[in-house]
Image (cartoon, rainbow over all chains, first blue to last red; front, side, top):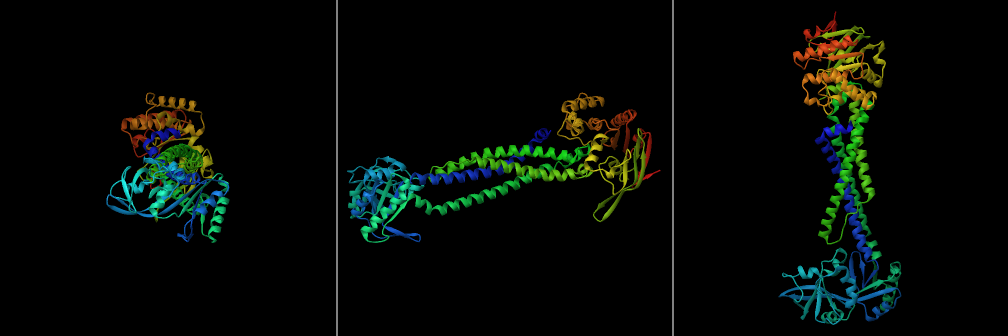
Length: 390
Length: 220
């Protein structure tokens, strides 16, 4: 009978189901997008967890202060440390770059082509042309920002750049990098170590990237690297060696904020959903006070009426919850895809079973409770009063 | 079978008190067909609601089979409404999402009669009121007279001893009204106590006894 009653009030029931579904969809989609975002970021970071970046300077407050540069001896000493898979020494400085009579200061990165390649080419990818070869003394590879944004005209392979007065040919253009690599790749021009040293008129090493075999040893190795370099320079904190692990720790605060925001959003969605569900349930039961009165007049006990309406509202809530979960998952996928595309990172919504279960639970509990209240009120009215209610 | 003692009902409307019933003492015997006649506002429907256990008195009592209904709790009152009394409303008050046979079966649903049995009995009752060809129609697909006959069938669902009609002919034309009164008469002949409220003397003429009401009082 509850089913018939639902079916007969098709429009009303569909609206009630929708009201519940929208609320649940909001919770499910927001939570799933949030989890997806978190996973995407940690995923990127753990993909780089075997890396240690070494810079000659320290972070004071929020700014990086460069204290000098590394020497060949530093590089060699670092190479000697056990447990290191590969190491790239890079020069790094700003240069004046000219393209079709427009000038811009751009940072230049030079290093061993093979090592540099293994750090950046594999994860980012080359869009046009090819990566540097050992003998590319007059060639360079540019990041996405350099190619598309820094000059009025887009730079392609075989275009010529004048860098600090010398002519170079673009042999390759990087793909747009994902968030984790964007700062390293997009705004830079890459050279062989020799070419960069020529252009920058220096043989200084400003940046050492190290990859370790065993991620668990990374912290220890980073410490050894720091000590070796500090010894060479006779300073206590000349070098800074950061593992991805410590970087993750440093941005842990950001994660906590994201998580807090997520919980907040979920809580708001929950409240909004609950109010929506309550409203639709209240309305749909209230408008049937007359029917409840009729049922009582022909001999229904209050408990009969109540269980009838509870059955009905739990059916509606169940359907609403299921629809809400399905819609929520779809919305989450669409949002994640859109956001991922916009941010240039791979992001898929993570639909956790506990979120779906939670959504269902909210639909059922809130739905049934908010159906219960008006049904109980109506079932307690005297039959005459309820019948008179139109 | 039914009698009232000093039955009084006062409605509060804001600050004003409306005395719908004033000290009503009425006795209805088993198997009687009684019509209560009075103009609107005379308190006749209120009296009927008291007798039908749909409403509770402000003071005084209604006795059904010598049981003071004021001493009964909610569920016991519901049981009386369900098993002992069949109520027919002026507005029919059918559940419009259910078809005729389901409406008739509804009181049996609340009595816990099995689905198959209650639908069969509901079908028979509809045949008895001349609606055998309309049992799957919705109330909205039936005329007023037909709806009232469904309501009568529903009132008989649990085979009650008492049938109460609150202006049962008020919303139908004269001819249908007569048909309905004929049905009520035949129910009385079967031995049921029938109580009807009306403002129409012609309708009241069907009853064996007539009582008039005015200003919440039963006139002798």
